[in-house]
Image 1 (tube, chains in turn blue, red):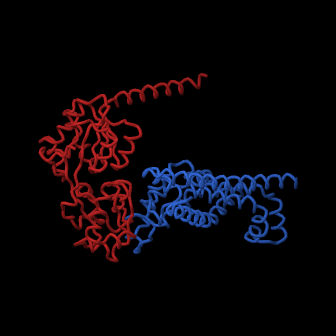
Image 2 (image 1 turned 180 degrees about the horizontal axis):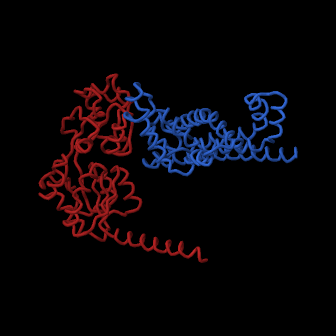
Image 3 (image 1 turned 180 degrees about the vertical axis):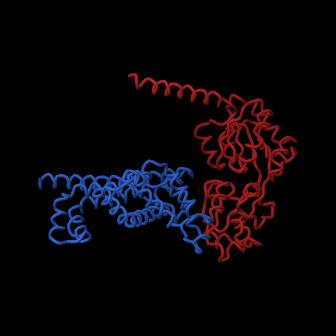
Length: 228
Length: 261
């Protein structure tokens, strides 16, 4: 049912989305935690900056990344002294998906941490656990469902990324051509059969991702209600 | 309501100005290959005078434009970077009989980011290890990419180079890819390369009989503005066109080489 290039696009997409969600999860969790538990000067600005890729056109984010990594850019070959190999490679697709999915991951993680009763963390501290140990042994396990939801959100968002990816990674069949890009190319070239196959697959994946996220979030809130 | 009023007024004003734009957009609609953009934009005033109408441009890869014309028929004139797209338009019965002409010729060049130190003296050099990625128009459809592929095939290096190809959506996107430094080289039109100060031309692809790059113009059948379209097409082959396209590196084709099929 799937042509060779559709299958390649699917594999590349899964690879990119997995990589991007792994890449984004640690900073996403840290930022989510910070925003959920700390008050600091300029918090509003940090919150806004983190959410910016949600509302900016993906092409604008793509252009920022392109400028950053282009040959004379701040992180370009001439400044670094070596070629970071981001542009027109799968690393570029990874970077684009990571940046575009960070807001969703951080926001979902924040909600997950906000659902953890601060008194439990306080007790852990009173009983002699350090801040890091409290985070690892108390907060993370209690927020686990929400954090899993955050990871799946990141994965799903990465699967759908188009605008930044096409600018930073190009649209190279078998290399950087993800599902989203392959659908575009199929339409451009009139391969409607392939486009339909990919449409079906992306819809299924998106449905599964969103459904699981919803279940995780709902599950964590009912659990909390039961505790209360 | 008092608060809403200014917003409503603003919205109404916006609707009015959008409407104004679309009516002004009642000009002659020209779908043109992306490589013609600098020339057509620079010469717009002269072209409008020749046509006796204001012009509305839509630039893109010729294969894309063809698809758009076939799907929605919003174009009055099609300026394609190859003959193939025009053949397709003709076989769809959408070329106004007697209006098709080949009006420009172009060349391919190999370009690299300025100051890269790369040297290319033949197609075989593109198969060397210094070039990990090579940008060309998507050879599956974009004319510039198809021309580039024909050249590489003719020189017998396509097989080696195919793995390194970064296909881009239209001819001018080759320049952007090369300027970014994300590719070590690209194959672009000479005219496009001349518009960028950030790329260096390393090699000029010799024009061959089998690698004739010609631009085809025709009025799209069924348009309501045929007289203006015809005037514009006639102008594209005259001395006035030489003034617009010549300085940018195009070769304006004399009238007797028309290939009206």
